[in-house]
Length: 389
Image (cartoon, rainbow, N blue to C red; front, side, top):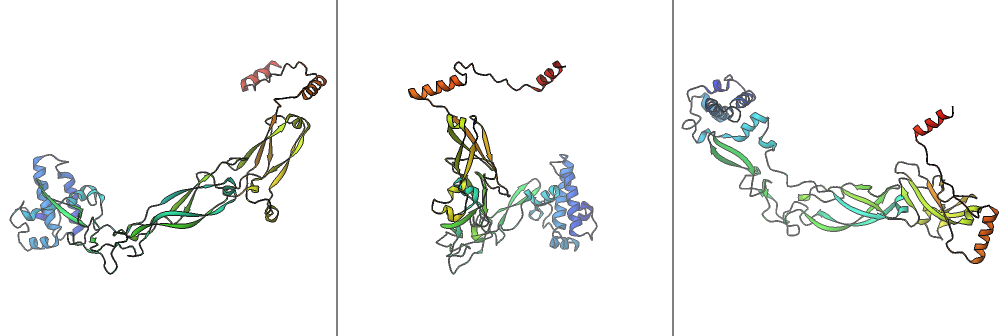
């Protein structure tokens, strides 16, 4: 090659490595065959790539500056190969595919684990501590997590010499293209375990059942997840553990239904009681936490009295403040009691006689019923207002 290599790249003879690399990137973007199909540009790209191969290598550059032949037999010979990653650097400013070079770590963080836990409504409302038995990967106690049998240790891979990558060379019209691939002998780790631990087969972890105590905070609901940091799976090679998530499922309650932080329940009263009024004694949710003997000692309010006024209609609601579910961020919801009036379906002759007598007294022997008007729309109310004036 008669043309000066520095002139090919357009740099001074005393240019540093960064200046040479920047010049090559600039020219590669202009002359690469994928960008410029002109045959002359392709030929120039070969020369520029060969010049960069020499000037980017300190030994080859020193030989060239002394007047030697850095190609060892002319352009296109065995010494004229260049790295495919250098071309990718020219276009993307980094290594090919964005992959980092060097061995990948054998020790990695473990995966997170998820288990589901069913609790009662009272436990979800007021909090509870539970013991859980979980099957997860733990660090192997025989090898301490490094995967090697006691008395041995991992050694550098002889194939890649600890680099974790091997070069793959392919000839093309550009010359020799060299790409880096994970070493098949060590799977990219850069080391091999000649004598794996028999307990974990070289993985550094084993499966085991263990018992954990999880504290469920007050106010959780179905779908709430409680995080236990570093209680998940131990990572490969004895790496740090992931987290354990406990997903809560609240079992249905025979009396109460939960809507947000409010509780709902329904009481059924006879028709006569709804007409005359009565006082009901109803349980609170706290009653689920204690038995009959421990209720007084605990100091919890396990019941309350609800006044049903005379003339209560079926479907009416009474709100008991502060008897709902505690919130995760404080406060407490309400208890909404819906009254359902039960109409008797079977009457003996005397009961029927008394009801007919009551109907006579109230003038209801031949009731016609009342049709309630539906709520008018905004336009209907406006029309009525105009019609009144």
